[in-house]
Image (cartoon, rainbow, N blue to C red):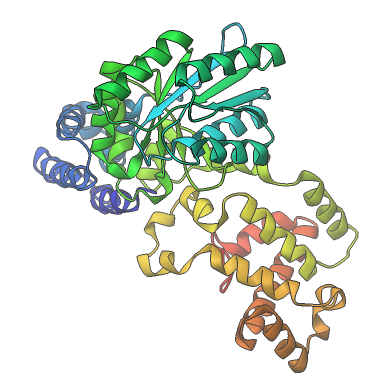
Amino acid sequence: MFDSLTERLGRTLRDLRGQGRLTEDNIKDSLREVRMALLEADVALPVVREFIEQVRARAIGAEVLQSLTPGQALIKVVKEELIRLMGESCEGLNLSTRPPAVILMAGLQGSGKTTTVAKLARFLKEREKKSVLVASADIYRPAAIAQLESLAASIGVDFFPSRTDQDPVVIAQGAVQQARIMSSDVVIIDTAGRLHIDNEMMDEIRRLHQALTPIETLFVVDSMTGQDAANTAKAFNEALPLTGVILTKADGDARGGAALSVRQITGKPIKFMGVGETTAALEPFHPDRVASRILGMGDVLSLIEQAEQKIDVQEAQKLAAKLKKGKGFDLEDFRNQLLQMQKMGGLGALMDKLPGIANLPQNVKSQVNDKDLRRLEAIILSMTPRERHFPDTINGSRKRRIAAGSGTQVQDVNRLLKQFAQMQKMMKKVSSKGGLMKLMRGMKGGFPGGMPF
């Protein structure tokens, strides 16, 4: 996420960090580089101008020039200005109304609106403990209604049936009425994708808004369209009273122009961002955490929250108890760890949040992908239960059989066993007295060589 912007800004700010003294000249040169980085990231020009001016004003003041570490002081200023640009704090949904709270979703065609409806419904159900009903008022796109019905069933929320020959306003009002009967906390209305220049379609969504008076009207926009995302949101906001924006496909956005432009141009907060294709891949938008990611500082808080939500506590406790009793860490345990990692979004999602990853060479980062996890799992699944519990029994002929069964090579099986042996050593250190500290000293901030994560 935001890889190119992170790399460019990181390079510029690293050069500053090592300087014992900053002058107006080298600040000017550095800000020119920052300006180019933002423009290349497709941040809107007015936003870039204001950002650079704000940073310059603070950079040539006592706060930075008289600091004992002026380079680091300037980086702090850049981070604070990035946070200000994106909205200071995370603004969640306002659901403080008499149930059901109505959320109206608007957006362009192809922005991922229907999937985002399902993601938001799942977020409200699992994280906010709300009962949710979803309905589709998209009578134009073939299979839109069936798509939402299928997604609703997959995440276990209620679905209000509709037909393509109905009026969208009638559908939406029926859904709200059904939500009242069912005592649902929230009803989310999906609408057809539309352009802000399509007067007929804009009239339709205005009618929907007037009929429902939703407490939240969210604009769903593809973050990969850069500053166009902010300009489109602004046009919609002029026609419809938006309360917030959801950025989709943020995991594929290497630039970051939308995230940095939307708040400044529309005046509306980014409330969520989609970070993957699954219905679980929706994150609240925390400007401070996103700023940390952009500057290559990672996002440990989000990583901890994700771990708390996704990691199976019972499995972790069982493994801890097993290790404490002196029983060895086997390949079945190793597979469980791989599954836990996949639940947290895979290697890409984890690396995006780890501090210092931005400093790794690009060829190293490009080698890390979730296919490695799936390959390792396939190899373990091709083993017998005895082989998983007693890896030392795996000889040459067994390796050939395992490789054939998993569609891999014998070299892949050997690599897995080597990685497992390293993981086994780590687990022994953790389970011994004072083991965690020994482990951390042994790792020296990194993972053992050859590990896929």
